[in-house]
Image (cartoon, rainbow, N blue to C red; front, top):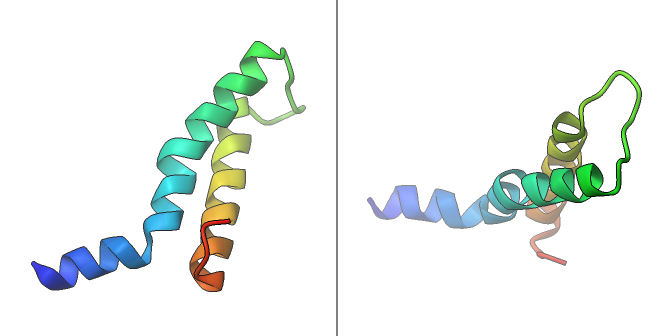
Amino acid sequence: MTKAFEILIRFGPLFFGVLFLAPVLSEILNKLSFSIPYLSNLTFSLIIGFLWGTYACFRKSWV
């Protein structure tokens, strides 16, 4: 159980980026009526959230 918790903590920024940041960014883009050709707002937001979370995991910083 401790091992699973350590993994969750280590990848916390990635979970934050994908599970929180992506839906919020998607809704903001929807409210602004912004869209990217050939990509839905949710897909674009998931890509941004994943990249930002991965960067934060490697850097070991949330900001």
